[in-house]
Image (cartoon, rainbow, N blue to C red; front, side, top):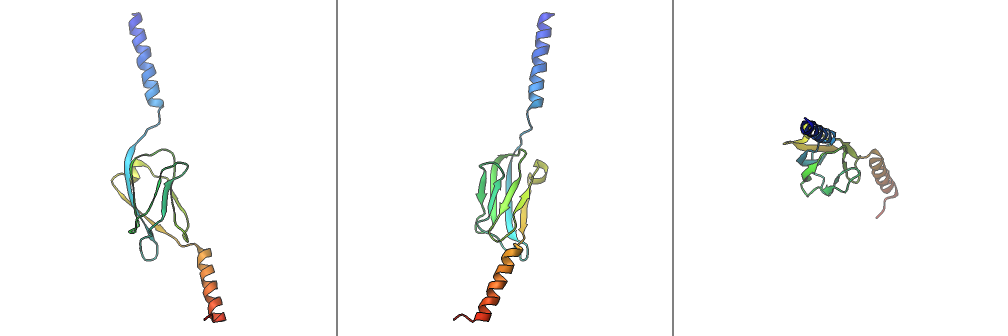
Amino acid sequence: MKSMQTKWRWYSCLLLVLFSLPAYTQINIFGRVVDEKDDSPLPGASVYFNKTTIGTYTNPQGNFQFYDIDLLNTELVISCPGYDVVAFKPTAGQVKDKRLIFKMHPKKEMVKRVLHLLTFRNFLSIS
């Protein structure tokens, strides 16, 4: 009888430990970063998981990939100079066996600065 109680305690402890661990899901993530206006690729955009050391850059076609990633409680962040930063909190169901496409919005401040600079140059007529 005592050995059965001991086994029961061990099984209970084992189940407790197994159910208390967070659910880790290793998956592959594939995606592309493009400009929202014309869907042109954005090479060199930074794609990383916030508060981790896991990150990469997009290739000349705007593509990125992560292999065997543990999806924890973190955001996928996409940033590119001249564009607003995008943060996305993926779940395994949202990204497994799918290709993500991020359409980046140009920063309004950057557009205003460029227009101001162009207007200034036209007014000044720099040769």
